[in-house]
Each structure stands twice: as C-alpha cells, then as structure tokens.
Image (cartoon, rainbow, N blue to C red; front, side, top):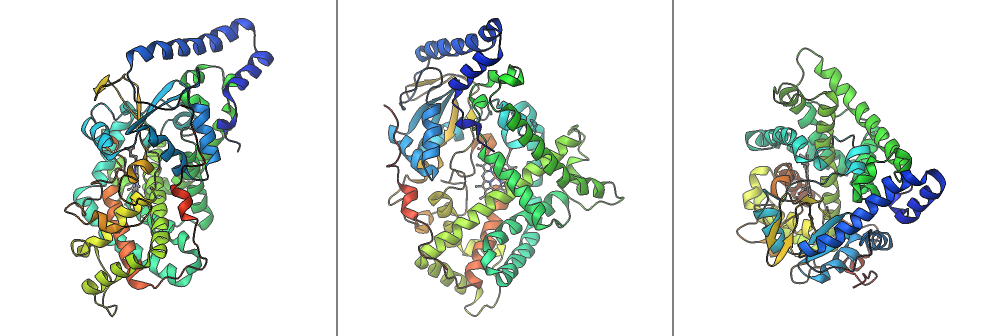
Length: 495
Ligand code: HEM
C-alpha cells in the first residue's frame, strides 16, 4: 500500500477543494481550521519558549522535511543523529503538533523519568490508533482508556508470576537451540518463534499451534502497525478526522488496513475463545486475569486487542534485538570469545551443563552485551510520543501542555566514547544487572515497557546458550555496511 505520508498535504487539499466541494463547505471545514492552526502556532510562539530546531514552514512546520529525510535515509540513524546536532533537545513542528526530541540521557531522565506524572499521556492519533487499531491497541491508548489494561498486564508480568515463566523460557530456548541445529540458515526465524512461543503460552496458557503462514501474518500486521505510527497526515492534524471521510487523506487505505488487521487478530483469537469455553481452560493471562477480573468490564474485542498487544510487542521487539545480537557477535569476535570464556568458567569448558537463569548473577558480561546491543543498534529508534498534560518550565524553556516528548534512541545511544564500536565493558558497573539503568530502549515513566523484566530473562537465556553451544561463522562478509548506520551526512535540515 502506498504510504499516505507521500501525499503532499497542501496539494491534496487543493485537489479536494477544486473537485469536490461547495465554497461554503470548504471555507468552514478546511480553510478556517487551517487558518486557526496558523494563527494558533503564531500566537503560541509567544507563550512557548522552545529549544532550537530546523526552521519550520508555515502551517505544516517541519513535517515535509522530516518525511523527506525519512524517505531519503536508508536508516533512521541518519536523520535522527542530524536532528540531535541542535543540542540536548530539538524542536520540530509536526503539523499541529510540537515535538521535542530528547537527545541526551540527562534530559530523558529529567523529563520522562522524573516528571512522569505529567509526561506520560499519548496524543490522540485518529489513524494509527483509530482507523488502524480500532482504538484498542494498548501502546497508543490515551490514559483514560489505558489504565485498567495496564494494571492487568503489570500483574501478569511482575513478581512471582515472572519467576514462574523461567521454566517456560528454559524449555523454549532449548527448542530454539534445536531449531538452530536443524535449520541453521533460517536462524532469524527461530528468534521469532522463540519469543512468540513464550509470550503466547503466558497469555493464552497453551502452546502455539500456528502454522508458519499464520505466524507470518501476525508478524506482518504487527510490523505494518509499527511502521505506520506517525505516517498519516491526519495524525499530525487530528481535526481532519472530523471531516467527512472523502476529505480525509488516505482514509480508504487506512480503513482497509484496520479491517485487515482486525481480521488477522480475530482469527488469532477464535481458537483462544474456543478454549475458554471449555470446562477447565489452561491457566493463563486470558483465563485467570482478563476474563475473571471484575474491574475489567470490557467487551470481547477489548480482551482480544489487549491480549494481542502483549503478544505482538513481546515477540517482535525480542526478535529484532536477537537479530542485532547475532550481527554484533559476528562483527566482534573478541566479545564473543570473552563471553564464551566466562560461560566456560560458570558452566564448564566441556559442555557440562547449559547456563540457566540462576547464573545471571555470575555472568554480568552477558547482561552487558544485552545493554550494549540495545544502545548500539536501538530496537526502537523513536519511542512513541509522551504527551505533556500541564505546562512545564524546564531549564529556561517553557513547554505548554500538549507538547510531545520523543526519546531519540540513536542520539541517546551515541552519547559515549566511540559510539559506533560495540563495547560491552562500558556497562560493567554496579548497575549492570538493571537492564533499564542507562538504557532508554524500553521507554520510560508510566509508559515504560511492561515486559522488560521478561525480556531480560529471555535475552539472557538466548544469548548465553547460543554463545555457549555454537561456534558461529558468517556466510557472507561483510555482514552489513555497518558504518553507514552511524552517518548523518546525507541529510540536511533548513536552519
Ligand atoms: C528487547 C525487547 C523489548 C523492547 C526494546 C521493548 C520496547 C518497548 C517500548 C519502547 C515501549 C513503549 C514505551 C514508552 O512509550 O515509553 C514498549 C511497550 C510495551 N511493551 Fe515492550 N519491549 C521489549 C520487550 C517486550 C516484551 C518481552 C513484552 C511482553 C511481555 C513487551 C510488552 C510491551 C507492551 C504490552 C507494551 C505496551 C505497554 C502499555 O501499553 O502500557 N515488550 N516496549
């Protein structure tokens, strides 16, 4: 499907104006709101004192520049690093929204960490959250609709419950090793199955019986959703969603994408529902928490979207992180050798036993590899908007309510010596066991990834066992033009 972001907003409106509508309608529905935004932007400049950024165009602001940079750059690091050259924070006018990119660990900690009480809202996104997600995917929900589901997810993914999943992760990681042995060339597929099978069992209580095609479909829908966050002009001018659908750019495509996602998610849910109707459904998030919690009075679609939100986030992010790990190890044989020698000390140099979760304390270098991987090639380069709910004065700046803060994963990860090098030693300190200390890849504040502790266990088992059990050889060298990813030369923004 062609991305709606490619459509020039102004020319789109002009075409609609000249071909479809009466003058009165156009004046009231399009020109007046556009003028109002322009005047509001002009007047709010007086109220707001914002960090520097590229020069915005009238009305659309930096939208066109950012979308073009995104299109031109083969990798997000290019434009994200370029934007970080404005300082610790960069202001972007994205249509009717004001984005503040947070480019340093310090300001992320100050704004997302310490001021979480007022920086944890999500903006209203009529396309990514509305049309594409039927307003039900947890990660983009606004607080009033999000809190109940979040509490249930937290209950499932913390404390004693989390410890219980260790056995499951142990078993699934052995299955992954077996898959590596059987089909080494499909190694990346095994990562998805590993992560997916774990979270599927946790959420549904049963092993996944999905065919490869069904898994591919589920993954496609997840990736399509993620790719299209902030891709529609309507999400940057949310008032456009109040117009009749014929005036909404890309409406038909977004709507049909949402319907397609709904159908894939529904076909995932049908067998789960059937199991629930049985006398003794297997214990799981769905049967124990979701369907029996009196405070969660939501309908079936709500339950379905909440369950699949967890499965989608829990499988795709882990898969991508594991893929980067493989790339990092092949590119850094000395790191691999050091990790192997640590494992030999703990588990025996003659394959005496597999590393387990109980070895985590004795194997800090493996945890340092996890943290370094997340820094070096961020799994989530742009953390979704954290919206400010009250005016905020911060270090001489004045941010009005409704400003959006975005963690710039590449900039934050580049704040160290020789950022392009993979050096786990930089994490070998008193906080190495805390996977979110110094790493913002799981987001932060009240929206912090609900599955980060589960992810830590999952990544530890996979990394340590893959390093301990296999000698690795890259079939094609060089693996990727690695240097490309750290360059920002191709991109420029107007000053
Ligand atoms: C390396 C692996 C992972 C990374 C990098 C990651 C990253 C993220 C990020 C950046 C967010 C948004 C945070 C924010 O807005 O501040 C998020 C949310 C979320 N993550 Fe993860 N995640 C990972 C693993 C997992 C796992 C294993 C699970 C499942 C158990 C999971 C479940 C979720 C869910 C359900 C949300 C939405 C939470 C909500 O709506 O409140 N994630 N994750």
